[in-house]
Image (spheres, chains in turn purple, brown):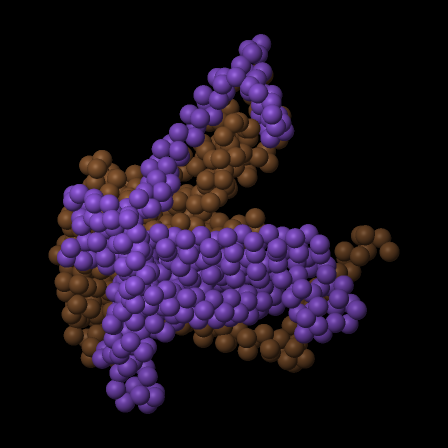
Length: 322
Length: 301
């Protein structure tokens, strides 16, 4: 026998059951539903949603330490942040990092993915494992190890360059402001290469083999296959993969802090390190000021995310047409 | 032509293709692939080289690192480096902290994502659109944005400077992808499953635990792995949670502190790095398929 509440559960099960405007009492099922949502609502609400909102309030106060009192100062923090050339510098570096990293990563991984996708390629599995290996490793640990790898005196990179006779004395890759950012760009591409590679491989696997075979029977050359089948079918994925890569370059705190700590002379200071410096590394923490910087950064990320959603929507539309 | 003869034909040609593989013409045809393989092998070596260098340095005598240059094989294996990293640099302690934090966070995240994903994927209820909207809107929130209020609220709750606080804060982070993966999977399961279970007298809880959750094992594997990776590698939050409690540091934070205090001990640093990376690399080697599938899923959906 089924009880009334259970029958209600059957009716409500599935997406179709609740049509718009249908009113239902807050029943036993709703208690279960909200009970199941409670852990997420509490944890996520407290540690992700609340902080997003609270940042706005904090950005309007003068607040020197977590134990200290907050004093309302209006828009002063924003005025100070926007007047700080170092803040604009962090944005310049964040954008520069993005512009340098994204094309290199997206294009080079596409080439490797096309090679690895072919069944004729020997040792594909082994190569894929090797390229993916850095992705799983802890970024902060890798960052510290890289300090040593790029050491000007005894690091293996400089030893190799000297042995090949390319340089006379070691280059201080991370210690000079002209090379530090590019070194981190290189390490970043190395570290996250595998993830974009896997995206491309997943995209390539959506193209059915029959298409290639039919074209081959019609006498298409390998280049023709690439030009007329692979490239057009990859188009929607290109947008998604580019945007995912773009978004991930915003999260470089771990690597930057451990490799360069934002230096030398702020030449690698990205927004998150700027926030960290004012909130946690300063002798007198400026939490209100840092919050204002965080809010502006949040809006920037939001903007990138919106761009991303629009891009994905456009890609979906293009996909459904073909 | 019948299907049978077609398959036997293709099998025959495949067999002859295998025989032809080592004839000069076939080798010539395969040459471009071997050249590409050689190029990729060079790239792959570059990709694993830092790890080889790290393992090599961790087994060398501290002086040998500077003297031997690019030689990867140590003269003699110095296991003492590991002992120094484990005890003196306290990486044994850091490893224990990381394991505790990771395991607890993964359990919390998987449970909360499965529960939320289940009701969001299978039930219609008032407020569902709002919940989904908030989740999707916060999909890409960076830690740097939320860190100040997170520390503030943990401080007020008395949870700062404790592993419990770190675990709760990490579990409350943006693990939206897990919820969406579960929701998508549960939505696709046929309605009859539930109905049959309800007929047998199962309530809400037992439908979830006895019928639905076991069916979602592939999703659970993916979410577990992705959360494990994110938590094991977490840095920003553990860093600010352990400023005044060095004994609670996780491996990633401990590593930074170690080179800050002792930047000359290269072999100790390398040994510490190997200790930190070995568990996650071993896990990757054994469960490679799931790692790759979990990440590829992001693009396909």
